[in-house]
Length: 234
Image 1 (spheres, rainbow, N blue to C red):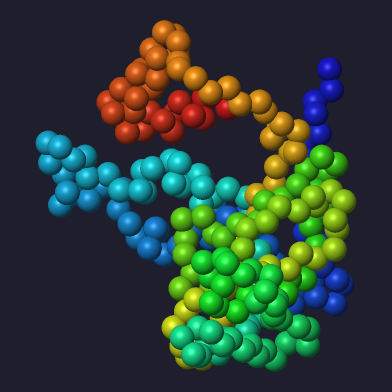
Image 2: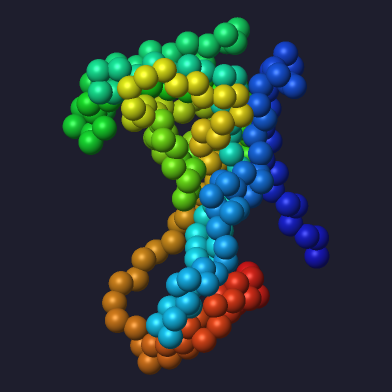
């Protein structure tokens, strides 16, 4: 039997932009400083009722941060936020548009609708194998104090033009400089066929209940068990 080819995601830019705009990176290479400095165990919190473990030892938290890729800001941008965030203007020195605006009517009723919807321009196109799409989300478990991107899914096996990223600027009033290379969105490729799954909702049976209790108790008994169990089950 022939092995199934490994799927490849391609990030492509115009020849004149290569080596000039910030390139996409693996999410796992861009962990925030606060997370890197966080100890796996806080000795001050260790007690008979508390292991002192931090999210540094939480695999679901870490896996979310490390999944997929990050598309960064292509070039440095200045955001001038005023009127309690209701006015946002942008400036840049780059020779391509970096920020534009959406009409407020497009997000009427959204909890963020008091803020003007803006859009970061991205100059990387994405190509995925047939049947694969990309989920674009704000960086998971990492917040940006100035802006919040809007999530979306694009069928990148057919739509191969650059995808721009709507956002709300929610930072304090003032002039803010966002440097080239600042992470904008997290990109998670997925195979569309894998999302076609039927839901069953109801009570667990005896075997399923026993499995649940076993997993839960193993997790309590050994903080590293989930890491080993999850990897072994893949």
